[in-house]
Image (tube, rainbow, N blue to C red; front, side):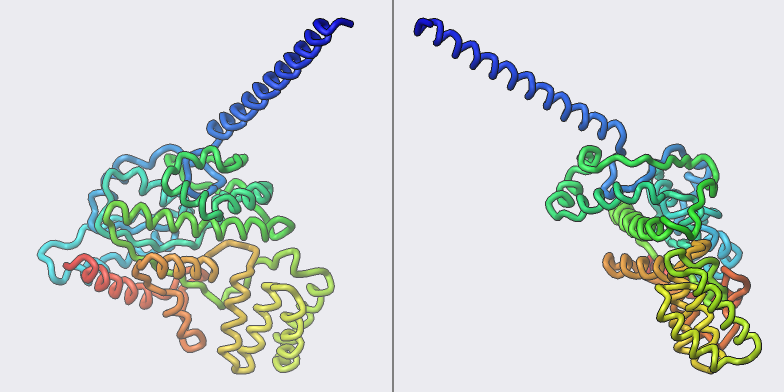
Length: 393
């Protein structure tokens, strides 16, 4: 073989390598572009990796009333229930002005914080003051599912990185590329909330609870950002928890047949007046079982029968916190509300703390959810005084 033919062969081989490299690079670029395009198509713009999308709008009349009010109440059934005490609020807040303050209650049964935040975004202007009283129906309309859990953790890790978090704050649209897409829940504000999907206390419930507590905090922070951007003031109210109501369900990870049998036995002892024996046994059981809501509740009731009210109350708060029935508010939601309020300088009415400070002294609740009328009326009157101070009325 001549030198010329060898040279030509080397050149051909080199060209072939370059050609293959070009093809590979082009395919890689196309694949990357397709992946980015898919994410942009699937993901909404969102600072936090929320596993749902919301479309539609409530009635125009409601939106107009909301944005033209001086004080806007938002929330779920808690906000709906206090509407009957609105005269006490209006009287208290309007004492130093000639015309009664304009109030609109935008609360709704089953309305989680995700809907409230989405509705606020639709208002062309926000009222001077927004009062949030909810967090009792956050699990009513499922917006977090165990099947989303691994994606949720990966997205949460992305958001927690300081550099990426700063980029998201500066350019929220890059969230469509950064976050891994979910199989999103879809909600329409024109339709009433529905409890179509339920996650029972079995496997996966703990993951759902972990997700939703974090999602609630993200939503509450977004609520604050929206209000601050418009110059609106906020008041948060914690949700009173009726500690005397038994937990609906213990999480499956916290019990087995032997624990259930032991708890049934101790419950019978409590009924028959053997409080001391039941107290000793239930204290051991509540420590042995991993955050078993029913064990904690029975232990609290035994402590109460022994006159140990402070000890009973602590156990009841724990029992309500790990109730996997998720049918009402939770001390955990209240802690999140307090934390976000403190972090952002939002005035807080700790209604739960004020009410349950009297635990063991009075009948505090009218039913399983709502406080006695006298307490609601007093709370709304004090809330009116706080409103007058915040708005310089």
